[in-house]
Image (cartoon, rainbow, N blue to C red; front, side, top):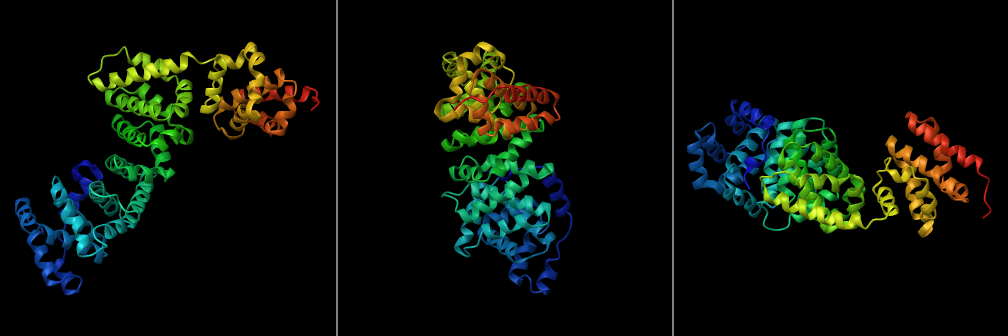
Length: 437
């Protein structure tokens, strides 16, 4: 793990500016903020050629690691913290063998190396925050043992704040940090326990980022999908399958498509019943069939495409029309597929909505109440009308479930199609006589 893995122009530009300013180390000694021994060590590396610093780190590496961490712990000024963080980053950059110099500092002080670095995440200075998280990512991702919760939790919370931040350099650094730590099981679980991160990643994709960011966020989802619990619940909670499908369909870069297809493979492999309905509705099968006719430079993508095509075909070919309708309900993505407007479908299948204590009907009513998507609302309002039309006791059932009130509310919705479908359904709800219980 090299620190160069997490790079960003904001960090690079500011690092160069900070390096150019001298640090008044002697004044710190006169103010009793640092000792004469600490000053002596600092003078040897301060503003010195890289070759000389490298030589000193080779001979006195443990002393410098301990010095930097102790200074970070006791010095409060922003500019000083910036300089110390740069010294730490420089010593680690492209030298993963030096990571233990910092982690072993715990033998001298149990608060080192993590406590002062984690404290930097609360700094008011963007550079201090991001440089600290860059260093923390290197140290934590290289930990030989499970990362203790008291270090992992604040680190993940810091990343959650960066992911949701309006500044692009904070989001960019946070996504790179996630890529570096998500191979670790405890990091995947900690990220999953913080919904702000996953919703933030989805939000990044919804705002049409460039190909590189699409790939990096896709890479995070691929790593998350190795966890069984996450694979079972991520689409239900965050609706990622249609988002990833749209990104893959629009992608020009092969690596973006490859990482999304690999993610889908994991989701099908680990939790088919949780993810196949959404894949059916998102039209993943025709997309995968189209991908299988293209030329690819990476053979792994061909294997994943073939696996998905076979799995999806095997599952979908045996689906009845009602299974397809159920898949739409389960996915939460109703659209104007042919089943909704087929009179024959409703005549033959309407009572199936009543099975298992009206389980499917309740899904439909929940979409009516909770969705903010105009197409979903219009289709749901339409389906409620079809239910009433083809099931004689439908009006009573829907009224008890609160659907009648909701459909009446939708008659004033801003979308004209939602208003129209709601009006038709209300007419049916009102005009049908009450059926005997």
